Length: 313
Image 1 (tube, rainbow, N blue to C red):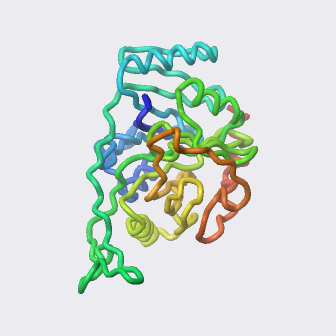
Image 2: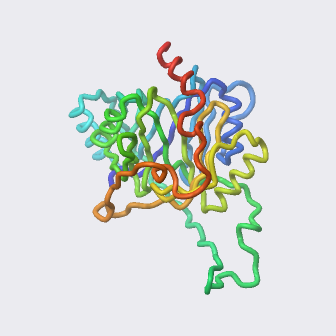
Image 3: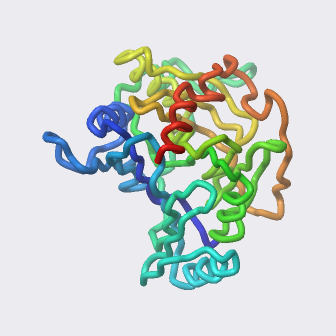
């Protein structure tokens, strides 16, 4: 597809320093100098380059989101599609910018290199009738390196106008719908990953979570264990496996109240003709196995405050 990945996001938070410290612990690599009170803190992933900026905002929110394309022809297509939707755009030689009318997030569709990932070696699993690892401990038991996210995988947004936001991203930007939750949400992709964006109905626009790919389920567990050893209050939900997208997950919470997810083993849609979007309901729209989601995952504890802050602004 002409779209090929999420390039970067900018997150607005009341306390930049504490939130930046969290994402450093999470395994992202800081690319700005430490010390003082920086206006913006920037972080990179192993394969995706610089993918997160954190700046000050009165309340936590996603300020902008970048989507990668290959060339200027792709930008022309997006600009024409936005014009059909009567959405104003700003065009440069390398990007088209527009504001989603449902969430008021600025979306920058930009010419960017595709992600090139070093392949993860397949783990050797022993199973009934199969001895794949003889006379040796599992690799995951002996790993001593720090967990480092490979890329930003997806972002989940609450939108006060879910239909408008879904239309903006599908008819305007060019995302494709992979699956939906009946009367609630749409999982959309701009790459071969099952989803890069989930937009759900909400009483107010807010950032629910960002999701960061790691190598395998052991890296999901190791990453979460390290984060919780430093601060057990960071725990939200996990370990588990989603049914939609199939990925393993563990969710944690940053100091601003945003959730962040380690994930591994997501479904990949390489041939659109071979994928049939499904409509999901009930518990399986949330997970296949694992502990039940806490109420705060479904409705963040600060949601009422976000609504008040949104109305006052």
